[in-house]
Length: 102
Image (cartoon, rainbow, N blue to C red; front, side):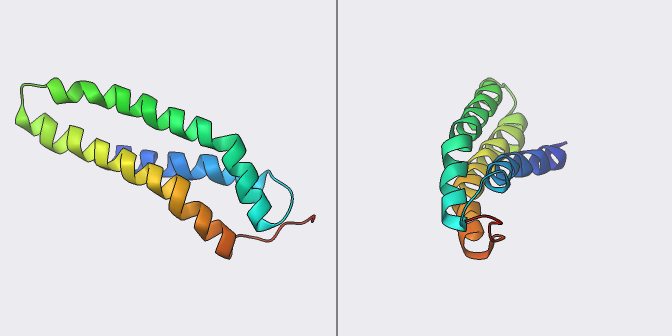
């Protein structure tokens, strides 16, 4: 179960930003800026809403749930958010496809 959630959370943040990047016109830098303007709020709201859904697991009476579900899911949310809003945009500026129109 946790592996499927990890894949879904990892793809969610990156894919939102990628859609904003691909749908923009201009150079790589301009497209990243436009993707931030259009997709920063939805990605951040998605992370916060997912975190709010996971936060209830911290009140579990079982250490197993806290250790293997809550902590893992919080780490996945933080790493996915870092990947989608910091690492991936830098990677797109350096290696992303050039724009068709300037």
